[in-house]
Length: 306
Image (tube, rainbow, N blue to C red; front, side, top):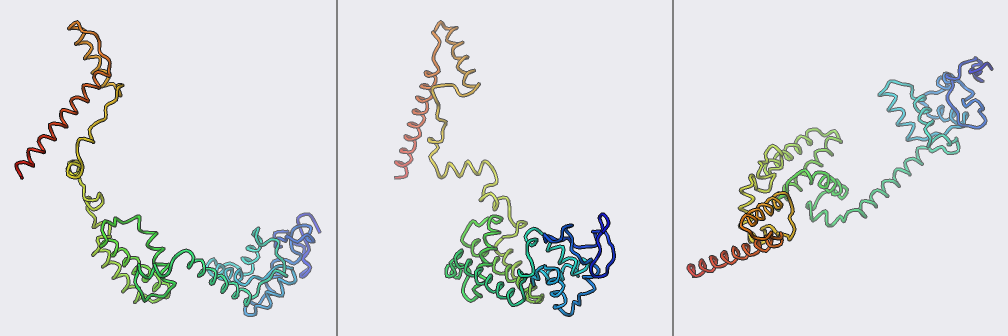
């Protein structure tokens, strides 16, 4: 065997190592199988799965049914060799240490898939309360679809402004119809999918769920301007508690400038400088006077209305 070459034990040709699949078996000292890629491929009859299993058993590599099927699908898409893709996938870290004794036949694979489905349904029942979902979306749908409805609801709810219970009702119906449309497409029933799509559109328009239908007022909770915001505050809250809460120390340059100006005027009049606390006390007195005036006006209105 020359450097970087190897003799295939099947065709007896001396070939570069690139013509051999990589091996993770400790008995293959050069890290490659002893049979070249071409000899392996021509030994396989894809109409007889047992020929592939025989080859894999000879080279001590596992047969994993799901992996074989996915490799076949990939080979059709990419127009590559089926067995080559399968062997390349077996080279991934999670498969490297597997040998023929780790093989999984179709019956085992189907049993595993069935168990996975059971575990999935169990997890669904733990994650969601089916009775609550039926109350939320209505009765009569297959049990497994309620989870799809809720997943769609949780996925999209942040994209919509659900301001009223009516918006909420339309949105739930929107999610149901959208899931039904997707399921119909997956089954190849495009006529049914088209009907569900029409209902999705109708619900979206009726509930103003389409972004193009939403006005600025819809997106801002009914407030388009600062004037509307101010009016809403004045109508719902007392204005006095919203006035600035003054402190005994200046907060910014305006406070300091005002303090300096007051002391400048006092100095011109021969008066001592004041502390900022005195300005603070003046603010509080004026605020109390204003509050008292507002209270008196309110009482006068009550007397007139009474």
